[in-house]
Image (cartoon, rainbow, N blue to C red; front, side, top):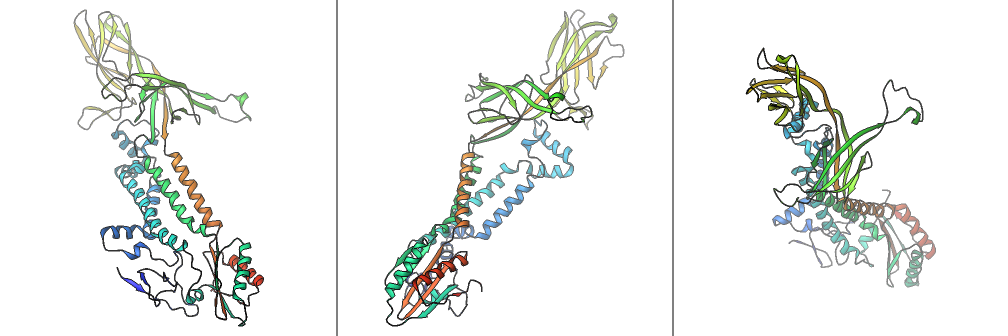
Length: 542
């Protein structure tokens, strides 16, 4: 490793700006108002400036760059913004049971842009591997940036130098010197100056010929406290990708249905859904609703079950009720960190089609009722003695395919089509019928049977947001630590004042990371109390 040798004879690592032995600025001559080495890390060399040979060094040096960290942050911000252009998959406001339904939703709702959005995987942006990789890269950059700078800063601050090199003092923006009478007691002046600054809250380091006073050193750690808070915050965000730490699912549950909650051992049953409306006498003021109504609350009466066989692959669910009650907007059902929120509803949806089987050849005699559940289609049902109906085919959302064959666009009963067979056991005969869009299509022109349409069963479907987030305390803790760092760096400053005697000459210098005016006021008060004949040259305004 190359070294930089100071005129005092000390060999300093590459990247060192102030000699580790005497404090003299290296490779810079201080002339008038010439530039002075950056004292952000007290002139100490950082690891990224010292080592660059191995692959580990190169990785370290890459992630230690602030420009790289800012670049990663910009990419994350842009990606996050793109993820909000259209709703993420879990927030789609209609049931989409299959991936094909998801793709169709984005295409039909948002057109070509929606298709591109889905194709590029932006519909699951925040859980995608590349977005998680960006977060990991940002965390890596924060850790390396912090270690690369905090170690040299700690080494410098833990050993404050009382006797600084003359060129160091002259290079400060806040500087002054004067000639003193030969009989001046330098020790007394140092003590008087120390006493004045001690009253201002400074910590004093001194000997007979020199003094170094400082306060607010802890504020130098503010940015690194920020980094620690951000690292904890990112850790909490990344833990959301670990199974069991985070759950954010949206489920649709129709009345009377019991479904499994994804990635949990729980099931939920929608006992009943109802919307409550404000009555006119309950409203604070009269409104012209033009025949409409104002919703008071959306509520799903639900039961939460625990599947005791959740850990047994292939076993039938063994459900045990653990909680029941209403789920209202902003008042979720909660159990051991799991929360179910009322987040959507589809009212008055088709649940079942009701028919009456009619024998036309017997004078339109009604044979019996037929109920076709659109979500759980019965394969066969007995209509009357000796007469039964079989369901041959069912298309929930009927469409004629490009090949001329019937197909379904979705698994939702938007346009149901049934093909059924009526079997008469008495005369060992059968006949096929098709129901589509309110019409009955018979197999023969002189068919014996037909269907008389009755009022269908309408149901409400509740949209429940299911959330579980064990990482929230960690995220809040990281945010709290981050704000502590912000306060440390914003409200306090690291101030240092050096006073040195070289024979009959006295030199005074000061440095702060901000608020030079405050430093000048405190140094001026110290000069006045200690009666030092020094005129301050304030180069901070230059």
